[in-house]
Image 1: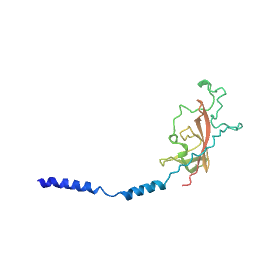
Image 2: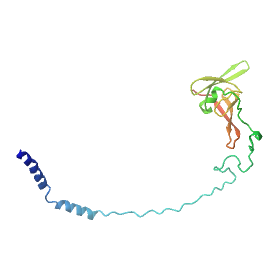
Image 3: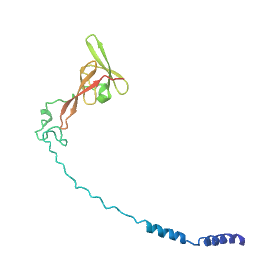
Image 4: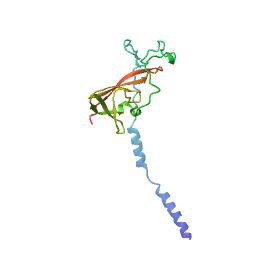
Length: 176
């Protein structure tokens, strides 16, 4: 049992004696390295002062102002006085009004006697038959013309001042 206690003690003593030794070559290497390498820091670069820019294009619209003239008295002083376009609140919504216009594709044309219909595919793959007077798109888009190559739509979008403006859109014949 005493031998078992002696083994760790002998191992500890031999380990500690192995740590001693001549380290002059290591110290000489460190001194040489310190003398060889002197760091050099570059000076801080000079920056030119910031030059301001004045927007001098007075004959074009300022891109930071709304497209409507806010200085003019609003034609929408009261809701009852507004005579511009507005959506029909009582009209029943049609199936194609659930999708944005840019997600709809014109895929064909159907003609029977004097009647012409455009064929429109919605994002879910369903084909709808439309003609002037039908509605399509999320912005109260009314179909105004159907031709062999496109369907013309007039959307009614808010103008940002409690009114509405018309915006033209088209569905072109899809290539696929």
